Length: 305
Image (cartoon, rainbow, N blue to C red; front, side, top):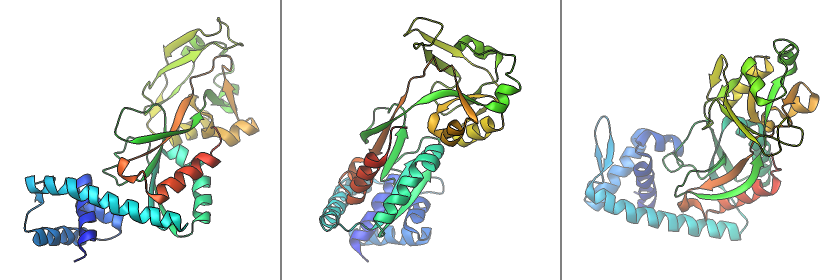
């Protein structure tokens, strides 16, 4: 038994709480992962995990061993990463997370370029519009759009997401043709498509700009209504392109259609608060050469979106 490999496997099982999750990460079977942990327990002469059909938990001995093992594994990974970095050789898996729309429409071209520059690296790209626990999922680095909650994650701001009120021209020339939209209150007459992963959901806030019908700086918040809400940015995009209604979204979600005029920005005199874009990583991964190289690549090549 390779004790260091078994130790790394045990640490990931303890962090994720699942043999099957770790098996997927490692590209092996659940049985193989279980055998590695069992072998480590035999070598140590102590039970590290308490297994039931419903739960997986650390024993008292397992908890003590986990804290020491996690530090040791992090130090070994850091030493290996620093060596690879000094030799300019990056290799192995890099697990990256982002929201679906951002990952597909902004991150993918940068990922492709990074892989072409580092042929020894393989990227596991996890796209999910919901919250994911980076430690439990074994994520090395994530791109998060929006204000960050306080956490132990390490964050670096890399850009800004500009949002706007938008609709397809088929909606504007059809349903909305006789429903003028000059100020936020006019949205009451329109079908608004709500993104439920946004903390404010259907409570949309606008700030009067130079072209607004109110004094510059005036803020207006209102609850909009519509016949569709979703937790998927891609569903928002599809619904808008079908002419189903108005959305409140980052402009990168419709970059080609905005450029062609197929989708139009509404209430331009009432701009919306932009959102910060951060790279976040678990503390144990901050010195990993692949994480540092990927973060530098994204920060350098990402235009403000």
